[in-house]
Length: 180
Image 1 (cartoon, rainbow, N blue to C red):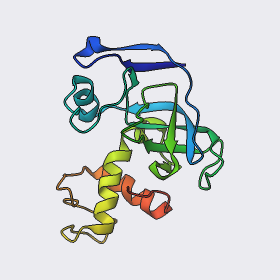
Image 2 (image 1 turned 90 degrees about the horizontal axis):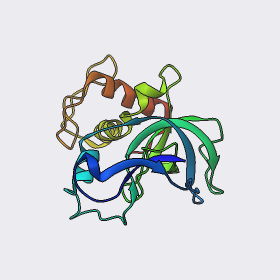
Image 3 (image 1 turned 120 degrees about the horizontal axis):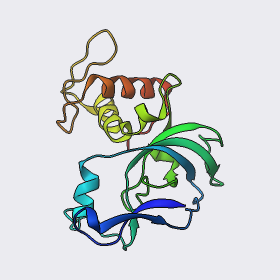
């Protein structure tokens, strides 16, 4: 399968599109056919080597942290997802892999997509949705309004846009996302 792979730390020349073996799901993983991937600052900071103090995977390493796609296989212990489910997810930092045709995602790092949104709309919402969901569940400084949830700040102090708040609210309403 095709994937965007980091060969060494550095600038754009340090990574390239290449063929790699398809991932194999662990017992609590879902294998997702990636339809859209989100790009955020952690991706280029990782590529530049700025996160080596906290994360040092073996290189070469498939990049990418957030994705949206369709489940094509599940591990033997997966209970919440089935083949054909449309999901959005954040990939565990030690595994990454969202910038590929397929990616393995831990069951606890994925959520069912809201029915009225497409893959592109969901691709970069897993991380911001987790922050917002954590704010809904555990932040005493959050302020709400009667029409849905309007978070000014979540516990990490990040300002969230209206679409992130709406995504987190829909996801929390579906009771399908565990903020971890």
